[in-house]
Image (cartoon, rainbow, N blue to C red; front, side):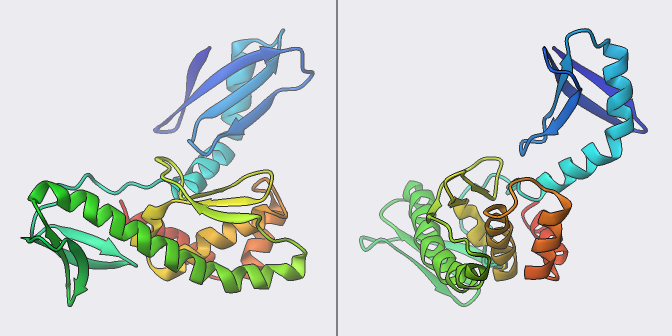
Length: 231
């Protein structure tokens, strides 16, 4: 069942599941959903009371995951429109030509397309190609650095993820969102380090935060940049 509580000016929606467990547990998913698992005889009021007590933690977790949610507004892919690459703004310039290509030229991303409707696909492929090369170049020294912790990702792959910047599978595969290529290098490093830390600590525990701070002292600055840049 779904329900909600009011905490100050904020509404916290949650999904409640009853089971034969002995204690009540609250989880905040990367999609910012609040899941509550409670013993079968727990009243809804008792569940709501527990959520109110945990509200600051829930909001903090949701805020944490928010930085991993791409929020780039929809684009029309027309000349004059601004597009990001490695944290810098470029104006899109589309021209019609037989030799299709995408090039950075000063403050412009110059797209030569056989027809205007091709611009979106050409630019998407260009971003993907650059993301593949840049992410691996940025990740390589960071992975080398993490070998002191006796961990190493099994692979790094790119995958479109509507609600995540990155993730780490139980088998050690790090997945990065190609949209991250639009953010500055520091933001990319932050997401990679975040996922590398998950190879050691799976949850967002204090140990995880301590390790992330040890490996990247200014991670909060880059987290904030990532939150604001693609909003």
